[in-house]
Structure formats: structure tokens, C-alpha cells
Length: 166
Image (cartoon, rainbow, N blue to C red; front, side, top):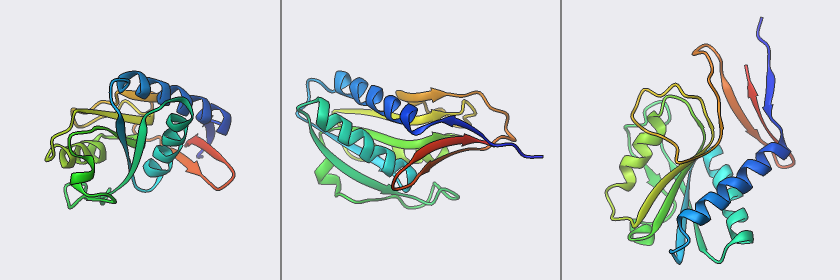
């Protein structure tokens, strides 16, 4: 029998987003501009929430970038909604909703390493602590030790957000 538990409510996600935004601001306080690059689809939604919080709390100029890759084959091609010239020599934060095995995040990181960056950090809402790759989240909303059989999902709708553990 499968049980579902809500592990983060919308209010908790909002608080964690705000805290991550403050951490990003502290890290990039000496920069003029920061690129927030979110991995499609939920990572990009989370990136937009972080970017909105950063615009409220800081004078940083924020550029949003959507990163598209095949999560079942993350070694394949990576697409970005802005050109490499638009993020070159800037600070960049790569964002995803859940850090499962680390494959998606590490292949996303690899893509951005082809261009010189001033600073490069990663952010996730939930870190499951089951990484198969040597990647870590610099900013995380929640660290969660789960069994390999459990599934963590973040749900973003137009009027709600929550995370569940099944």
C-alpha cells in the first residue's frame, strides 16, 4: 500500500524560496547581475520564484534562463532559452526542484562549464541525499533522507505548490 505525505506546503515552499534568495544575494552581493537558470519544467518554475524574491530583496539585475534537457538521457543535448553570450562572465545559479541521483544537475552544470562564468552555484528545493554523481546543491530548501523506493515530487499549479513523499 502506497501512502502519500505532504512534506512541504505552499507556505513552507515560499519561506524556503525566500531564504534561498537571501543566500544567493549574500553570495552574489558584489555582482551587478545574476543569471537564474532553471531546469525545465519544475526547476524553471522554482527558478522564477527565486528570481521574483531576489528582485524584491536586492538591487541585483536578474536574468532568467530556461534549461531544457532530456531527464531520461541527461547526457544528450542541453538547450538554454538565452544565448551563451548572455550568461558569459556573469554569476549563475542552476536551479532544479528535486536533487535525486544528481544526473540532471551534473549534466546541466557540465553544459554551463563551456562558457566562462564569474561564479557558479546550484540550488534545489529538496535534496534527497541519494546522489550517484559528485554534485551538491549550494543552496537547498530541505535535505531529506529517503529510501530508494520512495518518490519525492514537487507540484506547482497556478494557485498552489506543495511537495509530496510517496
